[in-house]
Amino acid sequence: MTLVIFECEAKEGCMDELKSTLKGLLPDTRAWPGCYEVAGFADPDGKTLLFVTKWESKEVHQAYLGWRANPGPGFTSLEDLAALVAGEPTFRYLDPAGL
Image 1: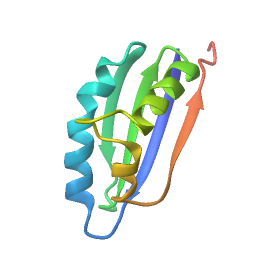
Image 2: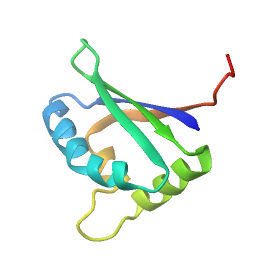
Image 3: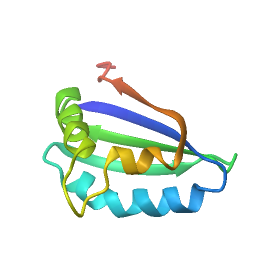
Image 4: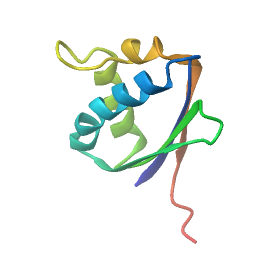
């Protein structure tokens, strides 16, 4: 299992639209084969969102991102999200430490 942490900052005045857009795409994310869990959190700064997700592997998550880059009609793409996000979102991949 791989833990993936995704963090993004909303452009000025776009937080509500970003939250709404992300909320709309999360059912597809959760339904992706190999996605085990998705939890979203808002920073008290009012502009940063952080998602903690569990995936079968880094490769499965990256396959999902490949699909999300060009998902086809009726689905939200990474390009759609980019219009609402300031700067580059970050992804961190963490593997179990066996502790």
